[in-house]
Amino acid sequence: MACDCRRFVSIQKEAYVNMIVLINPPYVSEWGPRVNIGLGYVAGVLREHGIEVKIIDATARKTSVDDIVGRVSSLDPDIVGVSSIAATYPVSLDILKAVKNRLSVFTVMGGLMPTYLDMQTAGLEYVDAVVRGEGEYTFLELVRSYAQGTYTATQGVTCKNHGTVVRNPDRPLIEDLDTLPFPAYDLFPTKELMQQSIPKNAAVMSTSRGCPYNCKFCSMNTFFRRKWRGRSAVNVFEEMKVLRYEYGVEELQIVDELFTFDMKRAEQISDFLIEDETELRWICESRVDRLSENLLEKMKKAGCYAVCLGVESGVQSILDRVGKGIDLHQVEHAVQACKRVGIKAIGSFIIGLPSETEGTARQTLEFIKRLDFDRVIIHNLNPYPGSEIYENPEEYGITIVNKQFSTYHFFAPVCETDGFSIKQQAHLWLDILCDPFFVKRGITIP
Image 1: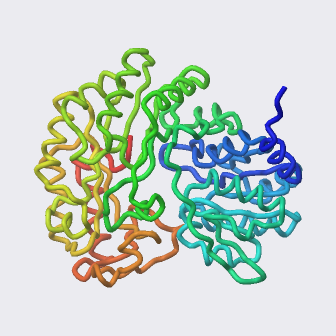
Image 2: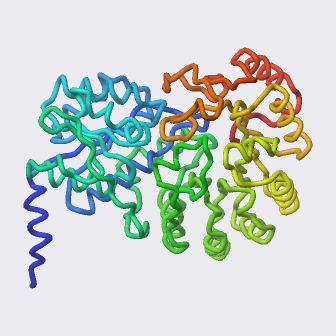
Image 3: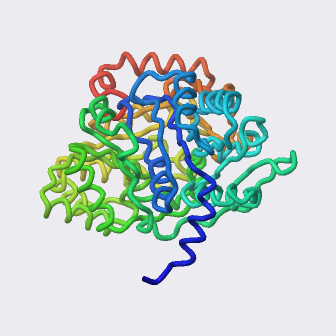
């Protein structure tokens, strides 16, 4: 039998890393705990390359930092990685600090917030490296180079080199997402998470990454560099079958920034679901200018029951100010098309965008009522690092009052415009919460 020497060398190098533990910190959204698919992808790639990996998921049960550290200690890993979004950034740091105090391990942080705050995060004494952006192959190379003692030059990593924090060049984005293995669902308490999800037996799934548009309030522009990449319809459908038939998933929340950017691909995915009769219910996000009535009809037949439309404001001048690139006539046409085919139109809106006043905010509320959205998501502007507004607030007439990201709540104002104070926003929220229209429709995703 022929020997694959390259594979042999790879295994030999990685033999020095006996175990990697990845941690999903405690966090539960309004739709319940779900599998951290980003962490699942990283685990899948590591395992595909012969590296033993375990996942500690602290979302299914109430888990303290001490409990997590105890479980890490029992596994005796060489490397510990923690994934972090804004809401979990403080507790993720607490976990790594506690791990570092008890164990002699190499500690890594990845995810949205460490990517945006990489220099600050990597400068902490208990964080050895930050994986920026897409983590799959950056983490894999980091593991390999760590085993050889050369990790400080790894692409896509920010780390300390002889006491100085250095940011290595970005790693190119993964061009073909079909080359990635499916997330390692078996390493999560997947069925337990599904029992706690709202509704039950629901799961999340990613079929594409990124968005090519340039909304000034969005931080994902930085993370995915304003590029949209989609998995093939065949690849997406194969994972859907795994979730449906192996795990018993009945409902999918597709968490892509823009599922329908490639409308033909969305149609092909729908065709597969219709032909196979999977009976999956699902929901996705879209722009109003990336939909057609024909596509919506096919999505409806394929089990799609709701589309979340990123509208943001009912005032055209505000949409133009933040670079949304749509007009209100397109919004109206999209909502009417959803209603004609029987798909719920969920409108997503932001209060407090640049040049917002109390008058324009109330104009948006009247716009929502006039279009009669089936559900409504309204939240305050929460500027995160990586967004144009966060990086240059004065240019947009924004004053950020609160930068404690872990305390951000979509219904609590954290910034104000020149014409719309925190106090005025709070009063507006009282009116929204007492308005029968919004009470009936709710203000979150169903």
